[in-house]
Length: 637
Image 1: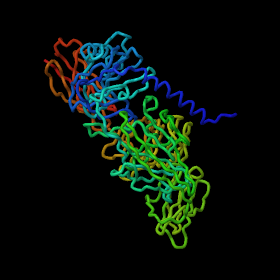
Image 2: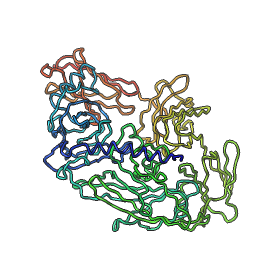
Image 3: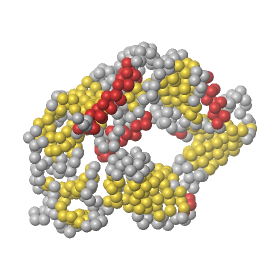
C-alpha cells in the first residue's frame, strides 16, 4: 500500500510534538521560582504566543507598576551563560543555564548585580563597545535560586518598565512559563478568552460567502458567547475561518494572546492550534499565521484557523484539509470554535455554514473598493450596472480578453480576474472609460527571481516571499520636488526577506552623492533606508512594499552636554532625519564607555575604575546614518 503525504505529515507532527510535551513533563512543579516579587501577586502585560506585529511574543511580560529597579531573581540555580547589552531588542539581558537542561532569560533590565555588572564593564572596555554579546565560561558565574541577578528596567525595545521572562528547552525553544507550575497566587487568571470577531474568507475564485467573493467579518454576540450576530452563513466552495480573540488576566487590562484554539466541524476536531513553544528561527512566520492584509485594513490581528501556503509553523497539531472547509450545495456544517488559555479558562462560539449554489444575480449590497482590489490570486474589478452592456475588456502584455460579470446586483457588477492566468495592464469598460492597472510581474515564492525595466530592477531571493505575489510598481519623477519616486504596490504582502532594488536616477539633484533612499509611506516621518550611488544608479534593499524617494541629510546630530556630576558626564544626542548610527568618547585620549538609552536620547559615562576622577579633555564623536558627524569637546575640571 502506498502511504500518502498527509500520513507522513501526521507522523512528523506527532514526533515533533512529543519531545516538547516530554520537556514540560520533565520539569518539576516547584523547580522554578517566580523571578520578581515572588511573595506577592503579579500582573502580566504580555503572555506566551501573543500575536505581535512582527513576531510571536516569547515568554511573559511581567508588570512592575511603572517602576524601574525592582529586584530580579534567578528562577533556579545555574550559571550565567550569556549577557547582552544593546539599544534594541532585549536591551540589557541575562541568560542562565540550569542543571535540568532548561535555561531562563531576563530582559529589559536597568542594570545587573555588582558581579555581573563588573564582568560586563571589563568586557566593554576590552572590546571598546557599549553593545556587547558575551558568553562567559561554563560555571564561571554561578547563581543560586532566588539570588538577585539584576534590576528591572526599560532598556532595549521595551515601551515601558517591565520584566520580560522566558523559559527555554534544551534545544532553545521557548516554553510557556504559565504551564510550568507558578502558583495562582503569583499570577491569577479566572477570565476566559474574549472572542470578538470572526471572518470567513473565500479561498479560491469560485468560492462565495453570502453569494460574494472576498473576506467577510461577523461580530460574536457578547450576551451569548455561543453564537455570532448571524447564526447561519451561506457559503459555496472552500472557505477559511479567521478569529480575532484575546485573553485577559485578573487585575490587568492588557489584551494577551490565546494559545489554544480548536475548530470542530460537525463535532469532529478539524483544526488545532496549540502555541506551547516557539522556535526563534520561525518568528517572522507570524506574518503568514495572521492575516497581514486584513490587519493593514482593519487594524485587527486575525488568527488564521487554516494553514496557508508557505507556512512552516509546527504548532498546528490537527489540520484536516489544512483547516480549509469545503461546503457543497445543500450541505450543512456545524462549526464550533473553542479557545482556551494557559489556566484552562474556556470560551466557545458556534455557527452554521450552509452550502448554496453559485449564482450570478444576488440581492445583497456589494461593497465597492475603489476601481479594483487584490485578494490572494484574484483581482476584483467593480463597475456600475448597465441596462444593456456589462462586458469589459482586459488587456495584458500579449493580448486581451472579454469578461462578463462574475456576479452582480441591481447597482454594481463584480468581475473576478485570475491573476495566475493573466496580469492585466488596462481595463476598458462598456462606456469606454479606461482604468490602468499595470501589474508588473508575478513572483513565485521559494525561488530566485529578477525583474528588469528601463529604469529599475528588482531581485528576489529564495527566502524573500512566503507565497506567490502579483505586484504593481512605478518609477517616476515627482513634479514638485523633481526627485525620483519609486512605488511598489500597496502594503498587502508580507516579506520574509529583503528585495534588492536598483534605480536608474531620473530626477534632478544638486549634489547626487549626498542623497540616499528613504521610505515615505508616512511623508511626515521619512524613514532612512540607505543605498549606494554609482554611475547614475542607486542600489538599496527594501523590506516592505510602499513608496520610496531620494532625500539628503546634511544636518549633523545634535550633541549637548547635560551635566557633569558624581564623576559622570551625561550628554543629550539626537538626529532629526537619518538617525544616530554610532558614537565614541575619549577622555584624555583613552576610550571611555558611554551608556546609551535612545528612548531618552541620553548618553552617560562609566569608567572602568570608578574611583578615578573624571577630569581632563573629553571628546565625543557622534555620527548619523548619512555620515554627518558632530564633535563635542570639553575640559572637565
